[in-house]
Amino acid sequence: MLVNEHVRFGEGGTGDPATGDRPLLYHEAGQWYVILSCEVKGSEPLPISYEDVGIDLGITHFAALSNGEFIASPRHYRKAEKKLKKLQEALSRKKRGSHRRKRAVRALAKAHRQVSNQRRDFTHKASRKLVNRYQVLVLEDLQTKNLVRRPKPKQGEATGQYLPNGAAAKGGLNKSISDAGWGMFTDMLHVKAVWAGRTLMCVDPKYTSQICPGCGNVRRKTLEERWHSCECGCELDRDTASAKVILDEGRKQLGAGSVPQMNPAGESVEAPVF
Image (cartoon, rainbow, N blue to C red; front, side, top):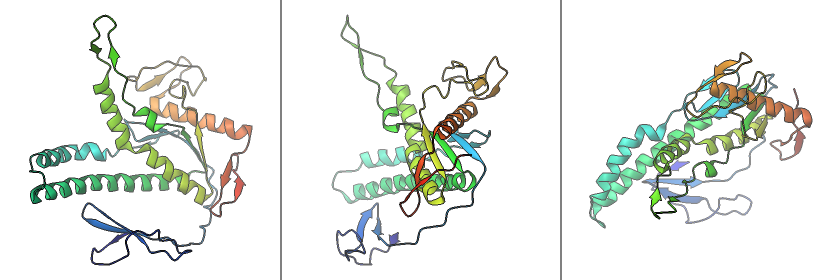
């Protein structure tokens, strides 16, 4: 919650109503925020939906759905990159300790905050639409921290000099992954699914982009190949094919046994199987 800077609260605090502690107040990029805690009544689960969906998160599209639909990637950071670069260059020219430097710092922080707010708003809305529509949602169990790791340096055995390791190309990919906000989206989807009584599953991402959803055989593809074509006659977008494989794997796990979920009251329930 955004508050006016003239409103006074005590410093620190947790905002816990059970202990009567004061709200937590903090300042960020020229704005003040207060964090309050309160007890609310648990929401009612949404009506049962008879649609399931597999979701393949990507770079070309933010997400490809198993029904052939796509969620376009907003690329908030990429769109603001030129502006951020100019603000960073302006900051580097300012004298340390000067008032102009402080203003440049605030301007850069404000621009970064705007990108962060845009990303958060997008992930909130996208996750809400999916939870409202589908009963079972299946994602890949992606470890984002591992995906954005820098490649290890390569050193020639004979000369001892460092060899090209694709760090520049990997840096661009890492930037796009971070810009997409997969981790934030997955967390929001999980919270909304629990409160709505939906089932959210994460499956092993191994070979999901290589398996044919039509016949189940492995169809090897490079990253440059964006179209899935198999001898069985299956022809469709590569990401859509991956989403179908993800959904099939989720249904297999549901068929093998129910997936425990938590309802808004914190009680363990059994996920419905369709």
